[in-house]
Image 1 (cartoon, rainbow, N blue to C red):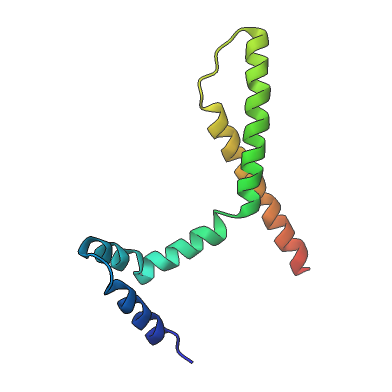
Image 2 (cartoon, rainbow, N blue to C red):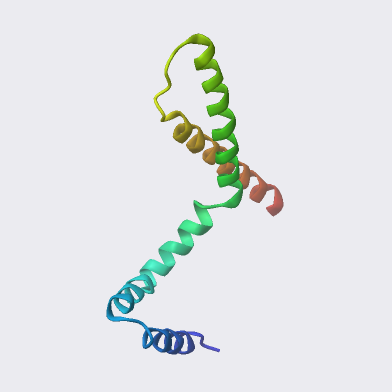
Amino acid sequence: MDKKPSYHKMILNIESKLTFSEKMFSRIINLTFINTLSEVIGFVLARPNSILCGSLLSLFATSVLYIFSIINSFYITGSEAVIAFMLGWIVGIIIDCIKAIKIKR
């Protein structure tokens, strides 16, 4: 069973109820390339475990660094939270990869 004609029919039905600018935005968003790219990004980059690890490491590292900076009288720049989130995100991706490898065995 081919889902493409029914999907296309549904999109046309929804777009008929939109304004011109909304319709143009919908056509851009629903291009095959954009849909595929979005799915790949969602599957690879925006993993729940990686976002959770990034958030927790960012919270912990920023808190520790903030307390350390108050005790030792130095200023933090503000990029610490972003850097900690990126490091935590990478740790989360690694954890997901290790889990996937263990499940395949």
